[in-house]
Length: 247
Ligand code: BGC
Image (cartoon, rainbow, N blue to C red; front, side, top):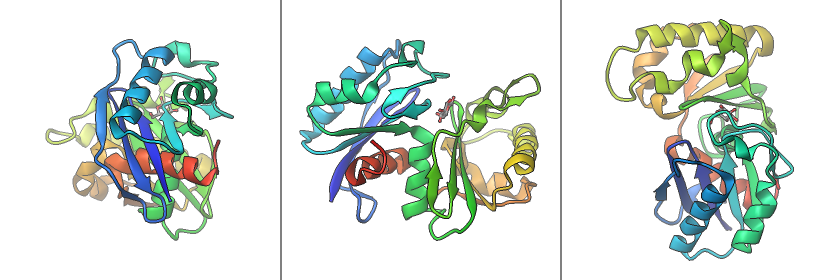
């Protein structure tokens, strides 16, 4: 079965169709810049453009970088504050005329990594962390998602953890990241204390440098590199829409 997955990020809105029985993309990814003023109306308009580009008819899953409960968004750390209290599911269904599922971006990455990636077959508590513009988190226990965890907003050194250790603070390709890894270690130690995950999947754009980072990580949990990288959000969104697990 196929579904369309759309990932709303701080810099781009990306979409592709996905075969949710294999996790493979069945079309090219189409990306449009996130509007500078990322208001709900402006973003919904871009989502429609992505759907039209693909001439898609069928279920659509959409990720949002915020808390999502029953299709309504309840937080907006890195997007326009107009998203808070916005019924994204109804608005998108009205605009697209299709069945739409809306979920948190890190949760989407989490369910995709569990089904097709680094968290596949792992028992116990597995934590997916995405280090990007913010820090996203997904808590999975024995393959089942506990939605809307927000570990990037743990208070840490008097600020949000994501202000202290987000991936955006360092370059993805080159440059010294030793100081940043120290910060990540502090955060992982803190998370170990309160959540005690068995496995941590290390994701987000900076995870491309996992081979440089991994030898310096000191958490007790086993830490593995995310596998789906850029496509995790798209694949998880498509799963949520196609399977009706998240509406
Ligand atoms: C948001 C999360 C999101 C993460 C990654 C945080 O600022 O609160 O909901 O998953 O950024 O985009």
